Length: 246
Image 1 (cartoon, rainbow, N blue to C red):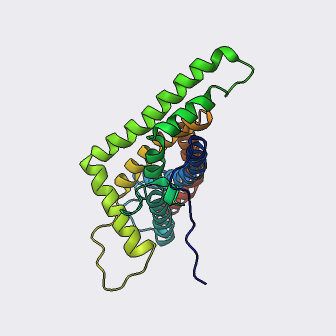
Image 2: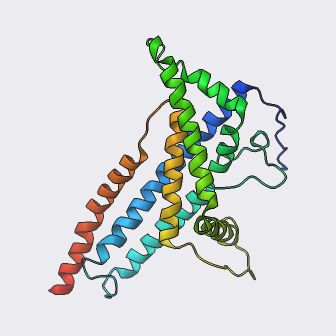
Image 3: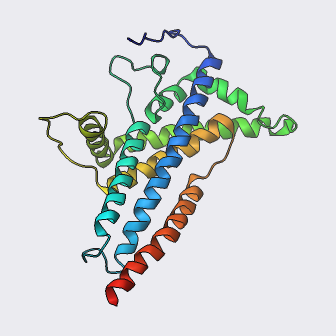
């Protein structure tokens, strides 16, 4: 059955734009957490190979370890591709897309109408504390500016732009589609994925604060995910090391 194109009003009201930003931020936040978990599991396992002298040493279970790491890297790649998905050239407007991505969220936050609505809403974050209205509004404005600034700085970096191009190409060639006869120009490297993850984490943190007033420090979440991952990998890989030394 052919899916009908959803028709949206071309001119959203201030409230509709703010609601759109909120809906996108919720999905972006959820995807960022998933990506952070994948990154932590991937990084923690990789970090332990060097001190345990297992990186270049064959061991029973190495293939399974590699499969897990590759699966985590693929999951991280998919999440980051989703987070940084650009609107199509013909639809450079959030009103015409159902996609929730950082570029589209920034496009929405840049709209003066959206900014005004969010700042007005921020004044009601703590309705029982009227004296905090101006403080909340200032916090909202600063958070919006920070989210936009972090995105703009990232887009000025040749390394980031190259990584985004590689990520998009890899996603189109091997993740979204299995296209035969097409050559994958490059595969995203761990360090490139981790760099994008840091950018997504920081932009999402600022955007969430601006939109709903919640101060989610995703760096703390990242640290906890890494601790959890290390708690899993350390006994597993140490056990393998002990077996090799017997």
